[in-house]
Length: 98
Image (tube, rainbow, N blue to C red; front, top):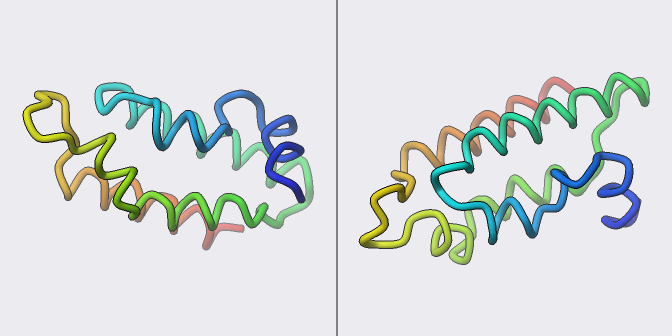
């Protein structure tokens, strides 16, 4: 499935670019919760299975650019390593559910 089709089916929140590079640290946790809820809805509506983009997105959470956006030095809202690792763990759990 192409990422554009995935985004259309999942809604605007599924734009990984928005979540990874434009969502600020202060809203990232709630945006991720919404994203995971949308993915769960997608899984139910499509009798299981999970788009490969969710796996790729989870891997991208560990990238340098993601960390640059969400863990900027001097940003009082910057995520800790533990907070970012928690988001990755929650995505991995979601992948296991599918």
